[in-house]
Image (cartoon, rainbow, N blue to C red):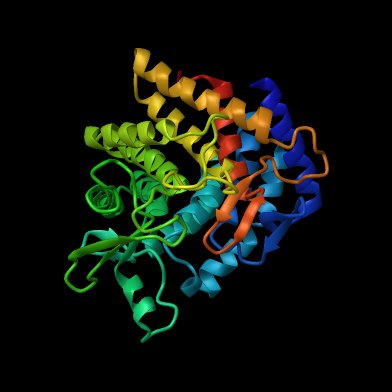
Length: 371
């Protein structure tokens, strides 16, 4: 683990010196491209830097993290209509991380503004947080988004739980828990695989059907979605103590682990009939490793050891076979991630969220304090 940690810290430092106040997204020919406002992924770079700071105490990383956060503040205040359910990703990893690390009251204020915006997307009839925005008012597909949830949102709920912790206002906690409960009976199938998205009648709240945009087909199991779900429910347990969330997380994890390839890394979708020429997704493995460690932190004895060992195996596979340790000109930490296979976008590249969750899991395992 120490070798992995040194690799992460060294490459992140080198990248920070090159990136300045920019927010990386995905690599093209080994170099990260950038987004002006962060899209949905911008603060994974902030999160990576805050993780390095928390691990080392070196203010180089915290200064680098803060240098790009003006982009996210501007977006929240000037272009809030461009934000969706991924508000949680964007403002947790940047501003909640800063507040926890430094106690900066301004970071707390920004994060609470974001929590308010996320909670405003709650549909009380259906007990869910609306995912995507209505891009083209009046168009059938876009109007459907008023009743759409997405599996990724399970990882956005910690922003709301944190908001309750620091304000004492239970409204945030209640919204997050209601959304998690709704997902457990809709976006999670009876065999403990997951849909990418699920639709409701946004007026009545009636559940309708599942649908995919990033998986192979509507009824298939998109591996990154499975990873979002297994970790998301482990975190929901952390904040609620609801045992059913932890048990669901373990069932979701067991499906993920049962469908790994021989090299220990998943295909981009678990339901492919023909895998020839189809890509792996290292980002799904990194997200799952982090989630498995969260599960392990809530267990004892052999169950704890099982999930911790599974996470460690994933990380070792990623480091030995998928990392850029021997490729100094590559800016990403992990190779062979798959962003959106159906659209042919960001295939066989490094993705900033894959890099972040790899670093989060390695630093968490390296500390071993909770195990």
